[in-house]
Image (cartoon, rainbow, N blue to C red):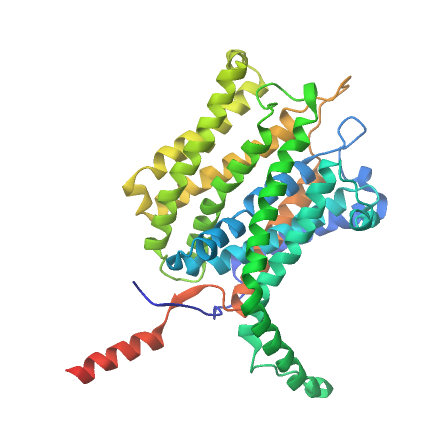
Length: 412
């Protein structure tokens, strides 16, 4: 197996794609500024009957699920001690940290009184599902940043070079980094285990949030096992998210994808999707909700698309050896799983939900869509900055290769 070493990427930052993403970010920031100046009603189509829109259904619910690669790879590499997957842990950790950061920001902008977002920290309500989700996300976000600290230490230990009058802080900061690195090396297992546990808690609790909606939800999605389905879908999408991120990153920085690692990850996705599909179909059979699929309407069409393109087709693709050995095949299959979970959260929080005495249906405004698209673009830009500063992406260790070559040469 090729020796890999995490290294900062040495590429120019601005490309045509980066400039295009920056335009989307600026567009989203303009609407976000209007939201804070004129209020949430001036930018969104939300009202008393539809208090939640895509900022919760997609930015939060889908964002939390798509950031699940952090705890799935942590469990795979650290808890199960699968050392061959260590090359993907750092990119997955960065993706999760960025994802959860923007989840927290999305919650704040969706609150009418956004300046009260700190209330759950001191106003505990143990009987509230929202409290459990909020407090778990806050703690897990802190855990993610703690898990990222060793990467910061690795990058700057012995390289702290503050300019000018700050130069006197170089040695103290270097000592702090060394103490921090040594302490985290001995205690990191605590944070890794805590991260996996916290993730399982709030991933499932998002499903509980919709269970209590009761008859307001369409029977195709309303089920007592919705918390389990949310957890299983998050676990299932974690590895495809890592696969897609790895392939796109490799393409962006002109690297060769580590297909032997990604192929092994792909072979794990099929059983996970199979378990999720079994629970999904079994629940439909037990509750006999399949009868709703015989009626042609928005709910039946969206449910069919979600299940067919988001679960069944990628399940069949990941069962294929040819697909698992092909970067393009893995990319398409992973994208379908990600789109399927994205659509599942959209269906649960928006399509399936019908408020009582509904006067009109909800459709997101241009401002809501712009902010959501801007957040996604901003995450991509921050990811690119991070991998160019910190040793996150693993590349072939040329020094190790030269050592092996010289040893062989000497032996000859």
